[in-house]
Amino acid sequence: MEDVDLNVVVKWSGREFVIQYGPNDTVFDLKNFIYTQTKVKPERQKLLNLKFKGKTPEETCNLSSLKLKSGFKIMMMGSLEEEIEKVNSEPEGMPEVVNDLDIEDEEVAIENQEIYLAKIEKRIKEYEVKILNEFRPNKKLLVLDIDYTLFDHRSSAETGNELMRPYLHEFLTSAYEDYEIVIWSATSMKWIEEKMRLLGVSTHGSYKIAFYLDSSAMISVHIPKYGVLDVKPLGVIWGKFPQFSPKNTIMFDDIRRNFLMNPKNGLKIRPFRLAHLNRSTDTELLKLAQYLKILAENCDDFSSVNHRHWETYKPKRKRYH
Ligand SMILES: [Mg+2]
Image (tube, rainbow, N blue to C red; front, side):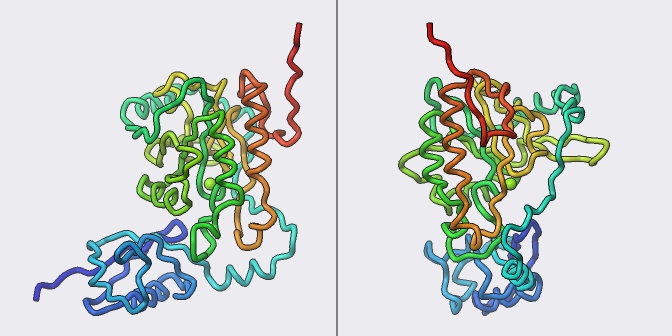
């Protein structure tokens, strides 16, 4: 018999693990191999895109019947025991984990540096946007991050719904009335599509996503204090679709540096983490749906508003003569 290289790549928590398996191994065996490399217990592993006839395979299912290509990438969700332990013992009202920089205004000057404008020009020319749904006239633009903005991608769960930020569909339905919605995530297009399918976003009947952008639409910038950072420049979208501009665009992301190139058009959303603990109390998307409505109805220039204070924003009263 031919010697076939049987392996898959498990993508978990931002890392990749190559897992070798034998011709007679089952899903159960695979989970144990994954355990030895990641220390995530088999019962906590959720292998998102491992499918047999369109369904999650039984643990007794033989891997050979799944017809996996060598190097097939499996997206895994699952938490380590020590993390679960930590979450369970964490006191209520703990502060947000801070892994973000708080960008000061002087650093924002990079916005207009020519080297970055040139990179954006290159993206405008070379990055291909696949339009999923045609634009409607006179809509504003909402650009959304996925991880920790719409979805807790680190906790373990049986279904995408358990990790979905509460009110996601209500939020998108409301936003869609006034905005074209774009998803921009610092991962590959394959994972974006997979996540959107998992969350039921790509097939929802009450709203439609205009298009997705992935990590290759991002650019890297150098900031002396922090080093090289990958960011999501809205200029790529504005260059491709001139009906959108700083006046009618807003971007939500849990990481402020992602909108380093467009600080006036970014809103830092509180990250949605620890889905199991926070699912019953997180109302961020409900409140933000309101904010988007107020902006759409009252604001002619989104970049003139300080989105840091979105919760207390009062529109200027319109004058009637
Ligand atoms: Mg995020």
